[in-house]
Structures are given as structure tokens and as C-alpha cells.
Length: 401
Ligand code: CTP
Image 1 (cartoon, rainbow, N blue to C red):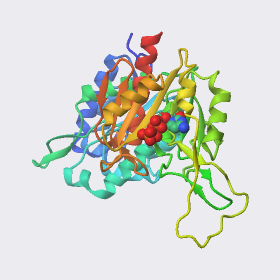
Image 2 (cartoon, protein in one colour):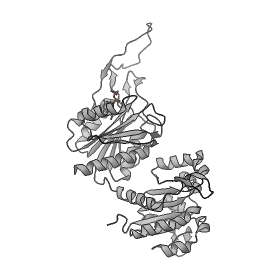
Image 3 (cartoon, rainbow, N blue to C red):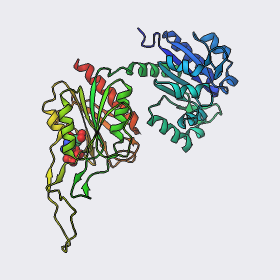
């Protein structure tokens, strides 16, 4: 049975030359027995007449914010939606959505939905590459909006470049994947650790690292979007905890260890994205360490327990995911850690690469699973990396069950 059967798909159509392709998308969705509700912006109606979609769609075409007989259309459409697909999506609509502007039937619906939103951009390549558009796309990805395309090719202007809307069949395949993955982890509980730990030297100083928490928080957001219950144990971070997670704020590795260990038994899996300090000061000064006359001072450090290794020893059939940040011998180091800590999956990144590692919004990672399968991911947003990691976890769980 098609995963789209009887699913309510809102199909947003915006003012692009590619608007005619929405007709093909609509037919493909219809073939898969989805109920499609076209929503056109005013600009879209200049490219394709609403009657075209009326003839093709099983449901009514909407292109006005208010209808006299039914009132606020965006709310009723939003409530029934399983997914909102906007194809094609112009730079203008991307900009509006990225800034919460809601001044027509489509953008108001976007604000009102509580379902995945898939965006298929279509525009001139200069517009697509414009830093403002890229910034807006980045912002939307961060909030969990999903993107398909655009692709490289000949554009309406005759120029070549990225900006072509993806092929209708690819868009529909992606919609199917998103709908299916919505309940991937329903009934499952995962604990995610994120951010750095702080190891206190005295009342005002600590040892820590540059971890921002972005990767762990992105994993939490994506996990929630796929139906999992998420417990997030985080070291100090400037990020707001994602909504709907059970959140525990900790400071030291030992505090993180306590939180992880006391919850481990009830978990279906643990994702240790935190950059846990390997050492802590042997002594913590109650007050403040004062300067002394000597030029050099010695700091004595003691090893912290390896949380992941500890839980790896009693893993059972739980899924364990570790992370490692390396500067050389990435794959070898990752494989050693995978084995030593008894993991199902390790996410390795080379922090010397531009666009990877601490603080930045993107990452370049390699996934290695316990069977030795290896997947090299290109540079992508941390939210997309999170998507890939959850895909892999799903695969590993399917193999296990
Ligand atoms: N980890 C942990 N407890 C620690 C240290 C690390 O659970 N005390 C986890 C991290 O959350 C991460 C993985 O182990 O998932 C990283 O492994 P680790 O061997 O610590 O990697 P590095 O810190 O990169 O190690 P090294 O400095 O030895 O390369």
C-alpha cells in the first residue's frame, strides 16, 4: 500500500515559471492516492489558472485567505494536513517564511501547520546563490523545514546553474520518505548528550572545550520530528532547548555521567554527541586560586570515567551512537573507538576541515557502523546530518528486530 494513501497533502504553488510542474506533482500524488489540496499564491495564478488545478485535484483549490462561506481557510487546511509541500517555491516566499511573514493564504497556512513542510525551490541561479536567500534557507533548515533541490541545469533565462526545480517524481519520492519517517521512532525513547562539559578549577575558572551543542540539539529536534521521546542532557550552551524534549542541564562530566547512568535502563538508545572532558582537576579550590611569585605552576588532572564505554559494557540491544572529533587518522581512530566502546555507530568528523566541527552550523562527517559499513557525507547543515544519523539508526534497528 502506498504510504501516501489517504494522506492530506497541502500543495503550495508560488509564482514561478515552474508553477506548471505542480500539475505533474499533483497527478503523481493523486496516483499514490493522496488527497491533495492546492493552495496558490496570487502570483502563481498569473502563471497557471486555478482552473487547471481544479481539474486535476481531488480537493478544492484555495487562493484567497478568506472565503465568505467558510471563514479563515488557512486554519481549517492547516488542521487536516499531514504534510505541506511547496513546489515550486520562490525566493520571495522563502524569505517571507524565514521571517514569519504571513500575508497571504499560503504563508499564513505555513505558520498554522503542525506537520512537516517540504520546500522545492525554483529560481534564477543568481537569486539562489544570493547570500540573503542562502541565509534564509539556512534559517529554515535550522527550524526543521525540509528542502528538496534545486538542481543544476538550464534555467528559464537560458542560463545554466543551480535553480531548477527538482523533477516531480523526485519530489514525490521525497514527500513519501518524509511522511514515512514521521513515525519512525514512535514509542521509542532516546537520550542525547550535547555541548561541552566544564571541569571546575576554582570558584571562577574551569576547563572546557569549544563545543556549542549544535549537533546534539539538531539531533534532538530531528528525533522529536520523527516521533521519538527525547531526553536531552546538555552541558552549558547558548542554545534554547528544543520544544518537547525532557531537558537536563549539567556542568561537569561527572554530572553528565550520573544523568546518563540513572536513565540508561529505560532508553532504547543513547547518542553521545557531547564533548566530554577526558580530565578534571584533581583538586577544586573552594575559593579562588591566587597568583603566586613563580612563573610556572602545575595543574594536576585526573581522568574522568568514559561514560560511553561504561554504558557500552551493558548495552544489551540498545542502540549506542558515539561521536569523535579527530585531526588525523579519522577512520582508524573512529573504528578503534567503535570497537572499544561497543557502539552500533560512530559519527566521525575531521575538525580541521572548513565547515566541520565545533561552533559552525555545518558538518562534514563519516558514519561507520559496527558491521564496518562506511558512509562519507558531504558538507551539510547539522540538521541534515542529524537526518542522516537518524536514518542510519532506523536501519540498524530494523536489522536488529
Ligand atoms: N565520551 C564519553 N565519556 C568521556 C569522554 C568521551 O562518553 N569521558 C564520549 C563522547 O561523548 C563521544 C565519544 O566518547 O561520543 C568520544 O570518544 P573519545 O575517545 O573521548 O574521543 P576523543 O575525546 O576525541 O578522544 P581522544 O581525545 O582520546 O581522541
